[in-house]
Image (cartoon, rainbow, N blue to C red; front, side):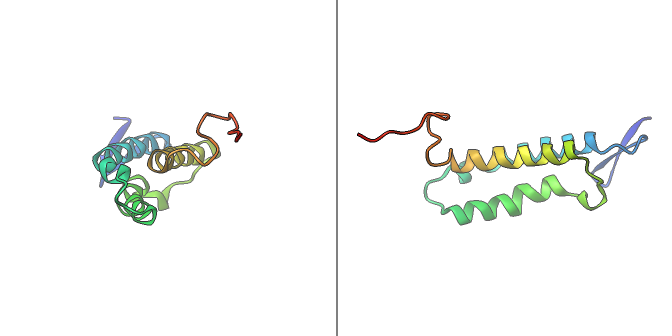
Length: 106
């Protein structure tokens, strides 16, 4: 047996955490899908949406992270997920509505 789950973490014979991070990101995405109606709601303030993200989604992803020794690639995977979720919650930044096309006023 090359890998097994123990206390919610996937342990590998080679001590690689890349599969664990992929599993955590998959679980975090599933968690996001469960609360996306709240995150898209126009009735909630941005601060409330950030609190939902930090208290519901982020702990799912970072469970057991204190034992991880991250490489630059794994850190990038986590940052990409966070950026993607935050962009889904808040939409594009001001001025990025048309993917790089500058807004002009006449």
